[in-house]
Length: 174
Ligand SMILES: Cc1cc2nc3c(=O)[nH]c(=O)nc-3n(C[C@H](O)[C@H](O)[C@H](O)COP(=O)(O)O)c2cc1C
Image (cartoon, helix red, strand yellow):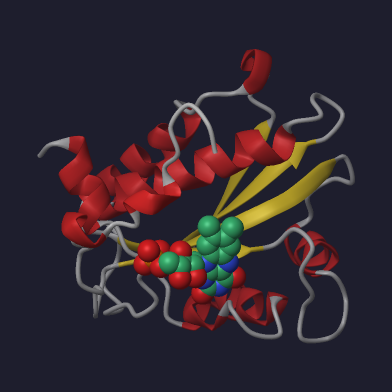
């Protein structure tokens, strides 16, 4: 399929059937993240894959709202960035997130970006502190976001190229 067509189909999927995400698809998703562009090729990311249901359910409380789909997800990829390696770790980790999200959709796997950085857990701690205690990542690794993954129950309708707001594109002068 042409890349634009894959992008048109990509949507945030927050409901899952409960079927497992096949391991070969999960590996492709992770490889898409590892292939991401990165400032000065530093690649400051670490990906933490969580598949234990009990842990996923606890992770659903890592946000007051916005992470509840983890209750039914098959797995999650926690994207962490090493702030000691580069000052553009948020950009680098965002690209990795976007590539994994797009790859997942292209493989028929539902996924959703769950914001971690600058967000709070239901118990009032930062999402980063909440997940650090649960998952044990070291202090120099900062939380960017979590990608929930599961076989889609409902996939929102693909976008229509004719409806894109082309007025947001400016040429030569604003
Ligand atoms: C930076 C960023 C943060 C997001 N945070 C969340 C989130 O915490 N929870 C959630 O359910 N969706 C989150 N989303 C998904 C957006 O809500 C979603 O991309 C948007 O509504 C557009 O829908 P679409 O992805 O289907 O095109 C996030 C997306 C991005 C790019």
